[in-house]
Image 1 (tube, helix red, strand yellow):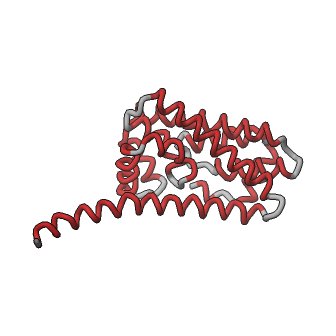
Image 2: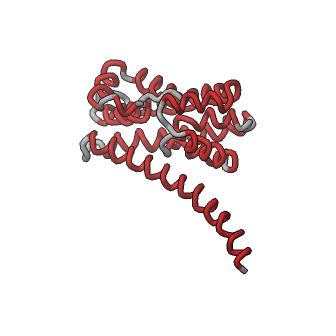
Image 3: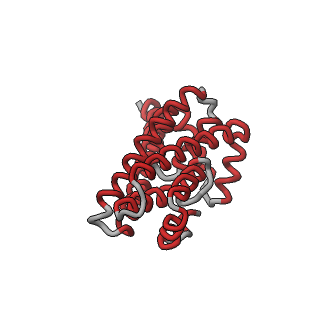
Length: 208
C-alpha cells in the first residue's frame, strides 16, 4: 500500500517532478490506485511554503487531479462492478466485510460520501468506484466530486503551506493520516451502532 513508500521517497519524487507529481499522485489515488496522493499533495504545499513551488499551481494541480481521478474511479466502478472492488480490496488486504459496510453506508449517503470521502481513509480510494457501483447519477456525482475536491485540496495545500513553516513535515503528514483513520473509525461506528441497536430491539420486544 501507499504507506510502504517512505516520506523521504515521496518528498524526493515531489522535488523531482514538482506539479506533475501532485497531479498524477492524487489522480491515481482517487481512481482507486493505492498511491500516496494525499502525502504528495501535502509535500507539494510544503514545498510551496519553502518557495520551491507556486502555491496556486499546486492547488490547481491537486484540485484537478482529485476531480479527474474520481471520475476515472466512477467509470471503473460502473463498468467493473463490486466484484472488481472486492478483488482490489483483497490485494490490499482489506477485509471483504469492511468493503461491504462501506458500500452499504455509501448507498445511503452517496452525495455526502463523495463530497467528504477524501478526508476519510479508504473512502479516498473507493469513493469514486463506489459511486459508479451504486449507480449514482453522473451529474450529481460530478458536482459533489468537484466541490469536494476543491474543499479538500484547499485544506490540504493551505495546511501544509502555512503550518509546514511551524511544524516538521513528518508530524504534519502523521497528524493528517491520524485524522483520516479517526474519521474512518467514526464512520465504522456510525454503521455498526445503529445495526446493533436494531438487533437488540426485537429481543426487547419479545422480552416484553
